[in-house]
Length: 403
Ligand SMILES: *Cc1c(COP(=O)(O)O)cnc(C)c1O
Image (cartoon, rainbow, N blue to C red; front, side, top):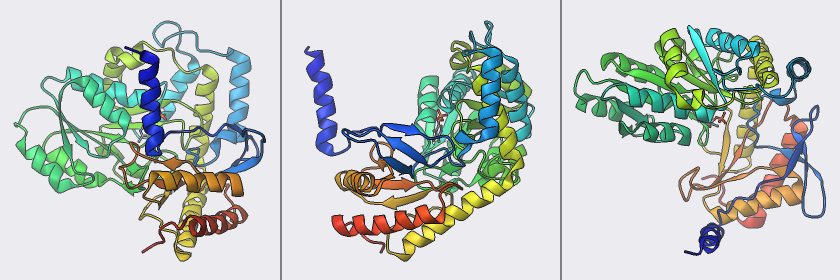
């Protein structure tokens, strides 16, 4: 076996399909978000980032940076161990208390990332609950799918956001078997929202646990940023809320919030929690400051929603095909991987606008898109420039207009 050839051929296949991924080499500028320096072959222009998951610009918030500087100087760089073996710093404890309180739960548990939180929690519960069935939305994130697979328990997939299909599946499960329903609130590629209340009703009827991924909603929805479940007054009906500290909260790390016994169970049995060094104290301090800040600043969420609504309207008005999102995510359909990459390149190199093309397997083939995420810091001037540039690129490449 020629290993090198094998790897090179696999990559060449992606290139032939037009979905080879090239990372934009950026240097973010604290104090000047969403502007970043872009390291190109022979230049380093400033560009405007239009596809960041730092949805509120918290990554440069002075209060958070100050908290991180302070903790860094106090505690040093790393955590020094897994949580069990000398790696529990007081900031971790405070952060878990804050997250529990945010979601109105008894306890919180932090992980190195949202990915690891999903993987560990779903796989541990699925493995240990005897004869468990996990019922999962068809569009769940890769990290949930990985957790479910890793659990090696039975899984059933219901059609995306389709409660009728969900109930049809639940009906077929022998009464008495443990069931966990796993779904998201905001689906980040289309910008739609799961039917949380209906799913909770079915969970009650069939005695199932509910696991919700609110990664694209924490910090952003609800009066205190606890997510869509808070906005819809459903927090107490969810068994396990999973979130990230890396998107709306602008730092890094993942978590669950749930009952005392459930968090203690994952703390005690979850491999991805037990066997990995905890996040650095300074990172935990930054997360803690961010959650506190975001809880108290609802005006950030209002501005965020206004920016997204304005961008959707402005693009729609000029015939750019915005997909029907009900959230802060503004997906624009291109429908072809090569054209999508070309549009993204034109925007970057001609107009200084960075929006990453979204291709298969992140979205289905034929639905390749540009996904814009305006933040409270994308002002009218930046938006004017974006709308004009998109119109030009659409004309230049002959891309499909809105129907
Ligand atoms: C990004 C993402 C995750 C993973 O969170 P990280 O903190 O980035 O690891 C989990 N679920 C969904 C839906 C995501 O989009």
